[in-house]
Image (cartoon, rainbow, N blue to C red; front, side):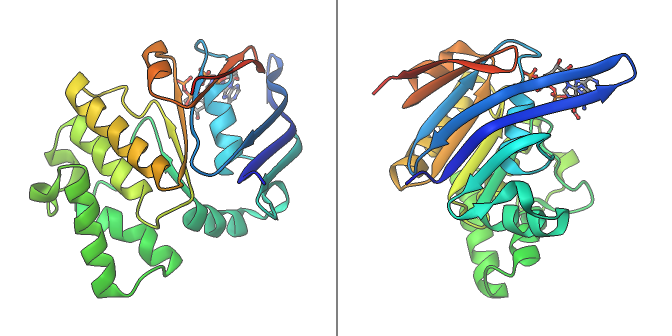
Length: 228
Ligand code: ADP
Ligand code: ADP
């Protein structure tokens, strides 16, 4: 049984110059422990697809099922709670809270969902910072560290509630090769433990790392290849 299913997902953005159909009826299934790459040119619909999967935006029509949860029917509040517990979202632009330390940024989703007790939360947040090699920066604010470090902090935050699904839009786009390698290894380890990883990228080098590759072209999933 898939962890996540998309059924005929359509996304239309109404604009002043007419409707833009960003997704034209996407069908896809994702299973536990899959490490899936989604590639496509700029404007193909990659970001829109991640927004539909993580529930940060509404589908125009079609269905998004997360196990037995019809995500497309949830209210915004219900979706925020559901997402907090089930989806770790890594945004291209990090979206860390500028006024909070890295540690507090990671504690935030744990507190929002009441996942752990306070002492346990801190222990886990520090563990996550260690996993992305940021333990020495735990008490710094995002502005005090580099872009690559912010990206790693954003990944640590996405892992805070130990979600079964991680959705990352260009997670290594701002990182040097060595740091990108660290991040990919971390994702691989998570996938081996059963976490489903969806990584969006325009970078074809992603192909070597993933277990499945989807190509999105002009709002359609045009190709699916199993690589291992
Ligand atoms: P990608 O991530 O592959 O670059 P996007 O999902 O961002 O593609 O965009 C797909 C299409 O939808 C593009 O034509 C883009 O201009 C359009 N689009 C994306 N977001 C919006 C929006 N908020 N309003 C209007 N059009 C949008
Ligand atoms: P990228 O294509 O680099 O992945 P995004 O799709 O994340 O970038 O776009 C950044 C922001 O701009 C998003 O909020 C998206 O909805 C919005 N956006 C993208 N394309 C358009 C568009 N054609 N018109 C209006 N907003 C857009």
